[in-house]
Amino acid sequence: MKVFITGASSGIGEALATEYAKRYENTDSTIGLVARRSEHLQKLQFKLQESYKVKCAIYPLDVRNHQALASAATDFMQQHGTPDIVIACAGVSRGTLTEHVEDIAAFQAIMDINVMGLVHTFQPFIESMRKAGQGQLVGVASVAGIRGLPGAGAYSASKAAAISYLESLRVEMAPDNIAVTTIAPGYIRTPMTNVNQYKMPFLMDADVFADKFANAVENKRRFCVIPWQMGWVARLMRLIPPFIWDFAVKKAPHKKRLDWDWL
Image (spheres, rainbow, N blue to C red):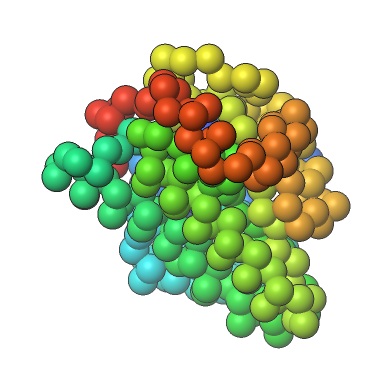
């Protein structure tokens, strides 16, 4: 089994890398790990190789850099072959407000990472998967992409775009027997959510989430909300008329604008 994961140095990405290493322990499997922070990747590589006896290839890079990702993909395929699963997990969140000119850079970066990062991750692998006649592309979206949340315009917009993009890609790839799976997490206990100062319903630990994520991928689910309770919340969110939605969330707590280190 060959799995390639972006955003692997912490949070959901790290949990997924660990989950796949557990699932393919002591097999001739390789996990490609991509993240910006080289030292975190090196520690994770050592842990997974020592604990689970799987091979790990690490690529310290920013998913906003298409050329760097293309080079990493080429190297991975030359060394290990076409991956069975490519998971675009890199993502960021920060509170944003349109009236603040200084938030324009945050809007741009969030869209570039959360949306274009998906494109940059998948594009280099599609030709090889098409030739192989198989493969699976997995994108991490969010329940926050179902409806716009106050104070999170950039994040909600990026995840809404991710959901639509992945749906388009799923239909495009179907004739080539390449599966596309969209995973929409609810609240998962990670550094991204640890800064939230409000109630997070159905909060799930990252390792539990990773197990359910891998199961959904194995079953080639088209669209999956985790945890399942948030799936019902997402269905309800879609049905609420705009005037009721506006009234319900206008006083909702906002994510802090400065809890972010990507800029």
